[in-house]
Image (cartoon, rainbow, N blue to C red; front, top):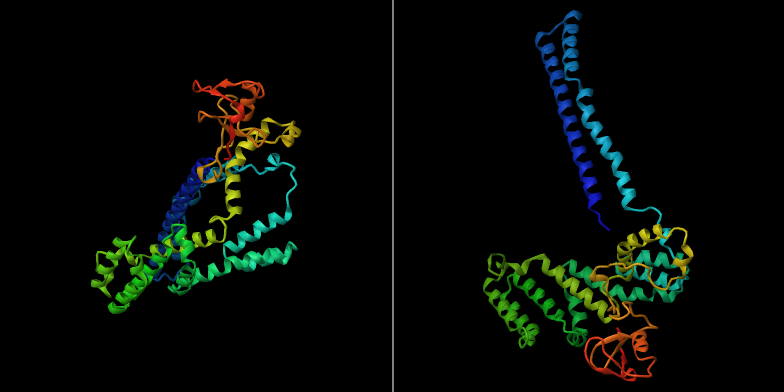
Length: 385
């Protein structure tokens, strides 16, 4: 969805509002100056007669009429009102309020959907909200089991926010073998953060002892990082003045916390991103072309309901592409479970239906469309994407 028109319309409204506000302040300031001048005249002359005061007020009235505040503000206010009236129309145009046209009458597994929603809350650390949702949805207690999966993670992350690395180090140490198998150096990163904290306290000997005990075992694969830490020992208590001041950046903690979250979810067999968030984000991109298609298909809703595949191509960003897609170069159709891609002896790939058609349902060999190889359909193997 292109949000630039909405942004442009908003910027126009903001600009007109700023101009209107600036003009209003200018006009009010002019009026205040004239009123203050009149007050100064009254105080200076100590006018006691009613006639003298009336003359001052008369002059003030004349000045205010010359300023003509309503006339000055009318133009900018009119422009602001026009911009404001156009903005809702742009919103309605960009955000179709009726998305039911793209709805398909599919039976959802309510239990699975509720699990996904509850899991989203638990992933965000919103444990009370997740518990409340499960109770309101009348889900069994087993659904709440996923809460315990993430509660430990958030206790660790909360401790890290308070510069306490002990829970994180304990968890990473207990799972060091699994982390190593996955190629993660999370444990080393945590030890490096702890080393910097010790060094900042000014205890060079404790920092050196910490390196020898906890960090030196990583020397074989991380020699350059350990060299950098050893050089930091020369700047004990004043690391912020050293060439290694970047080690003090709060960003380092954020990066390690994100890595811990990713690895924690990985070891639990869970994705790093919430499935609910990914689904909604992908739907946000895919909905506009479907709505446009349904506008064209008005009156043919039954056809849409019976389709097994999307009737139009829906382009999604690469972050939403989790599975490879194969389009047969012969039939120009996308592979399906019933029509899977098949690997031929020559290394080229066609869909099963195309191979069956070219081989007369396996009754004869045929030539590959891309090379002169003779293909025996019985020797073709299915590819699993």
